Length: 110
Image (cartoon, rainbow, N blue to C red; front, side, top):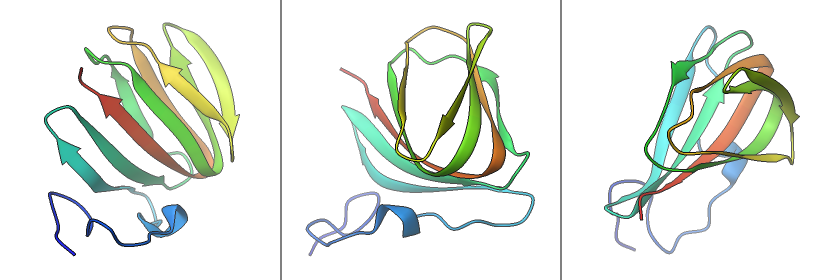
């Protein structure tokens, strides 16, 4: 199968294995990157996170493993395996892994 900025198209994938945990680090792997959007898998070691920022697009987060705190416009929510959050466009948000945490981030630019 062909590959386009990410994983091999048409191949079966295990979401939990797309990005592996590394001590003291945030690991990301691009699954798909197209002009209309991206899909990225992340693995965060406990205590690691992404600093506060905003995006011009809504961002869909699916928790694959673990637990994290996601802050959107000052409101903190704890999310865990199987839960989703849609982070709204142009709103400040951040996240921190309460314990090791994996997520799939889907950003649609249209």
